[in-house]
Image (cartoon, rainbow, N blue to C red):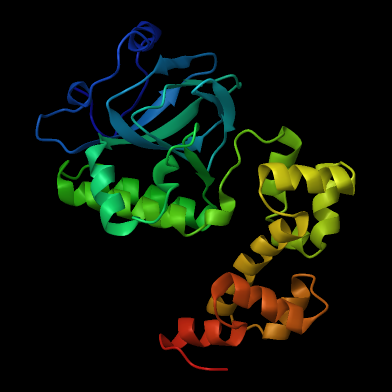
Length: 301
């Protein structure tokens, strides 16, 4: 029996065997009473967790290294901070094609738990945990949210595998995912667009607006616009402004920086345009947002 804190790798022969039959939840837990399994998987360069399906759900995120995640016939590159939500119907494998090991944090639990959570908290969200889409849901956690996920693991690693601790894990992880929907990773879009989409989130680059985004793409403005609409369901301007508004919200809630300085620092030359975009994104004006997050009350302004 493994220790819950152990970083381990099963033999390749075992993973090949997994390809033949679905993995059963009852076979991966230490005790019949366990409500979940929480582990860190260590995969050496050249090794593979061979394609398998299972009768349970998983939330996996990359701790270090990178890997090819082949899921339902499509290959998606996973790097540190990437989190993927695997459903019962998904068939997937992980391939370490890099030169260093990768470590994957894996939370497994019975899928019926998801039905209860969706009924309680996400009844109107068709994309909850990937919904009926071909590929499972995947997001990129930023530094602060990633640290929170790691702290959760450290907190629960040696805790009893009870429903209480499973709820603690799932609800906190779902909060992290729902807290940054704009960082949803479009898994099938071209590699150059994925890279630009990830890189433009740097506050220093956002100052240059759409022009910087197009430069990162390395394509013509027309090509970038067409690709954004196809793969991101947004214009280049909407992509850039989405991240600008996230940074503006963090600045307003966490600093005393004047609103006009935040506006100019993000590359806007019109305060009214900044106010309009912020209200569209967050439902209140920048000043209202700052007051609400500082005082805990809603104030007009």
